[in-house]
Length: 474
Image 1 (cartoon, one colour):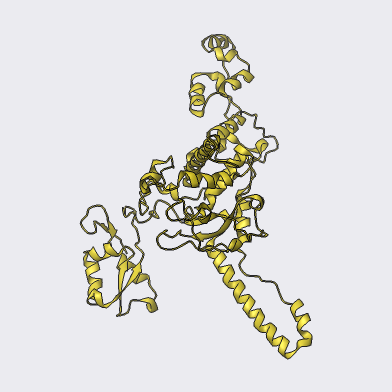
Image 2 (cartoon, helix red, strand yellow; image 1 turned 180 degrees about the vertical axis):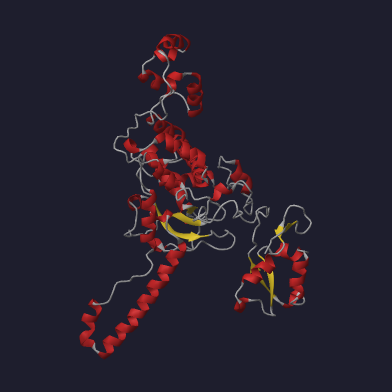
């Protein structure tokens, strides 16, 4: 079925797909087809009510007056040119790129009865705060408190906010700090790199100081990315071209193949080899004349490489065009450029595996909790029967019971995290090829990683300044 775009209700800036009602109806199984008591609306109810296409009118006419029926929400299927800003267009970013973008976790203050749990990270044992479980789609502060799975240390449905309101909260310790697990992972990396420790005390102190009683207009304006700040309205504005801000910065489709393509298995490979094919040799009688015109040719190779150490990639490219002396440069040079220009590409220099909470899926946690409860109840019923009917066999029966073999959310997450936590070998990687392919790929997840890396770096600078001013005391 062909889908046509038209300008919705006459406002001129909200085109919808004309045939989406007919399309979705046609795709439905017969048992789910609308009955006489139902009427179909799109997800955007207000837009649906004002939609004046002949198809919309025809669909309404099948059921009679609107007030007699209950609305049933349907998902709007966006065309390639759809401008609706209620979500990012699937033609511009795929679901696998956005995986985990609505997942949240919190730093919560410990209470007097706090006790360690087996999956605590090392820093949680000594810190004043701990990590809660994870949830999906953070609720509005005016509606409800966040729900998380699992209920780590008993924390669930308690106050959590990026802001502390003295007029609303009795104490800063009453309010947990929410974040994306991927963003916290990047914070831990930068914190470890700069301080040698994960500065969670500095982070939550920064929240309490910088975002305490802040005017609503100033909310969220700490990001250095103008696309984030312009999209951050009461309801997020999903603008075409800004899809990267929703891309997962850790688990990036397309990145691992690029990294693997740069790994060299040839035993004769050396990163000291030139990244480029050799130039044709010059006749002996012309070499002296060329050297007079290009004084760099008189320098030894070591000094030439020392010169380019001070240049960025664009300057090196210009220098290679200007002088034959810089044609042959070792691939290891691009390792230096990657470290300098892309410090957020930690696969180049770090073997730190992402936190498993960055890879866990809320749906898996829910499924595991449900399956474990069902298994527990099933086993209890059978145990009761054995105990009542053949009590002498109860001990042997319990020994033979299989362990729970259902969903293992954390195990699945750990395996996923380990697949991306691999550092490239410095001596068997073609760094020039990697640099070139990363630049060419333009991966949305890497662009978002770069953005978050910059913002986290700014947060650490602010924490350092607050310590110097005596506002954060360790």
